[in-house]
Length: 150
Image (cartoon, rainbow, N blue to C red; front, top):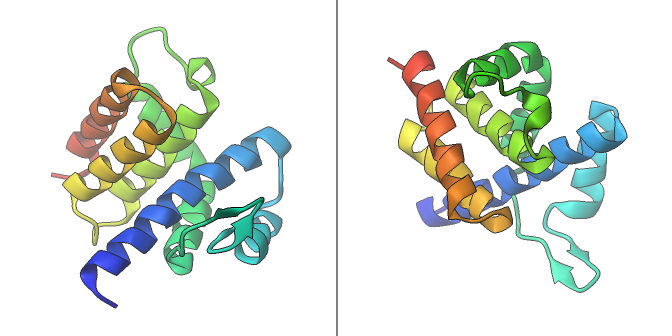
C-alpha cells in the first residue's frame, strides 16, 4: 500500500473512530457491538447514497478499543489541559471524542509522529467546527503531547 493511500485510510479510520466513540457515549453501545456495527455497516460502505471511505480497520479498532481501555487515564490527562473550571462535560460531545482519539494516539501510538496525530485531528475538527474550535483541538493536543512525549 502506498504511503498516501495508507494515509487516507487512516484519516478515514480517525473520523470513524470519533463517530464510534460519539455513538458509544450517546447510546451506551457495548464496545464489541460498536466495532461490529462499524465493520459490517459503515467502514467503506454506502449509506443513504453517501460512500464512506475505505478505512484502515485495524487502526480504527486500535483507536476505539485503546481509548476504551485507557478511558480514565486519557480523560484525566485531557481535564488537566483544559482551562481552570472547565470539565469534559462542558465540551461539545463531538469535540470531546476528537480530543479523546487524538490524546489516545499521543499516549499510546509512538509509531505516529506528534505532528501527524495533531494535524489529523485538527482536520477532523474542521469537518465539524470552525477554525476557532480547530485551534482549540490543536492547543489541547499540543499540551497533551508536551506532557506525554519528551
